[in-house]
Image 1 (cartoon, rainbow, N blue to C red):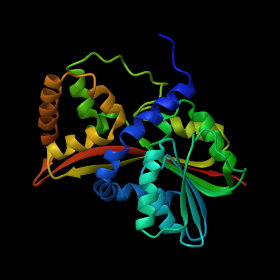
Image 2: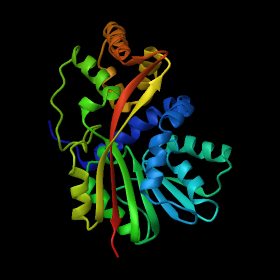
Image 3: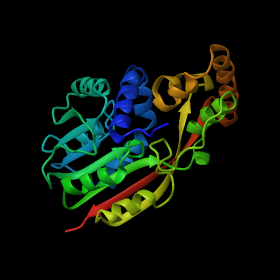
Image 4: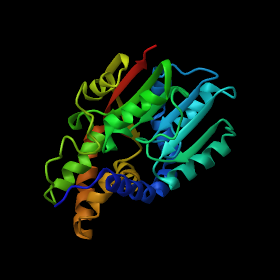
Length: 285
């Protein structure tokens, strides 16, 4: 079978993430609260402060762009870009509810940024870069739009074994269908999990003071059933695999995922570990 072009991959992803936009909005408050520590880490790594103009790549339903808008204040501004217009519609509604007038959202491909060179004081991105078919191209665009002596801060998923939150459903689905081994160079959840991989791309693009750190945390659910429901509502890659199961298989798979997740119960909650690679770099003068 012929491999897909970057344009075909991007279009498929646009459709996937638009499909789950309603799920993201449904679980919005929960994940905003659960991922607050990660959003704040990105704000810190990017050295954000009042008055800066910031670009957020892969904004989805608005985080960390909305937190960034609060960090830079009314004297600063934030632009969020994402493929999925329906995700950005949710982000725009949230900005209005928060009365944030300094953040705007645009639909677009982050590998072709529609901005002038040296037009931003910082770039942040959360769980976006690993899905891109041409990551070095996106990194080069980040370098182009950043001013000198400013920072990019990126969060991507680390190794599968350190991410039960994501690995459990994939392992269970494999019990019902044969999945080809992942292509290490193809877009996917764990595409940039290898230590130093994104850092090397940033170095190649001319960045300095590069940091690549594994950041550990967990996502906490009131029940394992809550965990499964949320994942099937928001995780487009897992949702695509789930669609390949029969209704009987889905019922059995759900039960097995619940049983596996229960191994991470801590009292009244289920705390599923995550590991994120936090990669930061400075565009030199």
